[in-house]
Image (cartoon, rainbow, N blue to C red; front, side, top):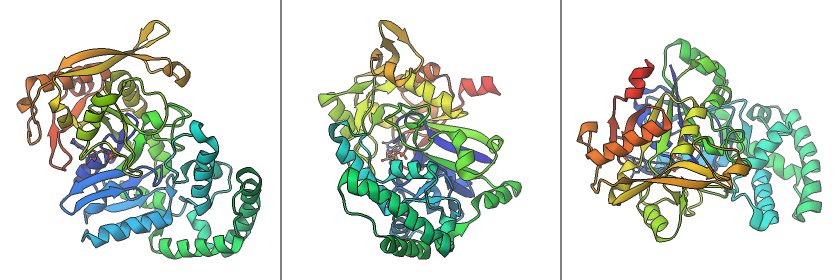
Length: 433
Ligand code: GDP
């Protein structure tokens, strides 16, 4: 049984918390895309953790954590994370790294920085983790696969070729120091030592696990709107954030993914540049930012303040559709308890016409939000366990959102802890089955 946990929005929806929670009943948790550029924040019995590379199920001793072939693998970052969790007395995790995963090289991180510098005010707002240069090289077929670390001849030869190519850009385009082949080779030897105990044929491992009836969770990073094909291109990430890519990035058949749990946040936040139709500013935004998430809406990797906005039904409906949602986990709802009134974006006005279908980026840039104002419930809803015990106005908010997006809200997260979850029988779910 394979389930995917993915985001409908711009990322930071709370996927980490939902994955951590669902991991209790899972055997294997797989990261299938992205790298150390975004983070999940997880609060559990061992403390508070910001994970960037390890899957969120790493805190249970019955689970195996897998880094799939689709991931941008930053080997030193992975090892720092393993050490950090071991220092906080989490049981030593079982970790497998795909022999087909590719490696984020030190020069990918440098090129990311140099390119953002060169673009100046027109930069993408990259986290400078080397992700875009990494995926560019993967598809240009000059990336380094983990398996290649173990073939000295291939490695030496490739290092020389890649240095030759990169040095032209470093010297003439960026005017920065050139790469030294011997130094790079030595770094890769260190990486080999670090990763060797974990390397495995992951797709074969998963195939056997599926045949043995194990439960596998695929954990996505970021959300639909950051997908390079279906998101707000070019202000997107460089690997697909969709559940369907989980099949590729883990190496399993697409029909094995039976449940797609799309995490949708009760208000909007985004990092980096790009159109953000329901964005709010000033004091209104500051207040939501300070109260948001668990201790404020600030980047888990960079610490930078996130951009804030009201809930966007247009973007979330689209986000859920592209994921192939079977269940919506509606998160961070407790945060909205301070508001007298809660505006919700129910349509986009583009060139004088209102639409509820999410447009391509050039049109999105021109969209203005059509807002509907719902009444706030003015109560702290943390600690509530039953749907019927939520204040009526809070249920109205949930049911309004569900109707607008058209996908069943079956989980409501009302706090950052594993236990802060309310299960709900959605009428949309019943109609479906
Ligand atoms: P992810 O990348 O999708 O996993 O999201 P992040 O971890 O970056 O952001 C989610 C933040 O919200 C984290 O600080 C979580 O601890 C916190 N969080 C998750 N669910 C809830 C919730 O229901 N309520 C509150 N208040 N915080 C939550």
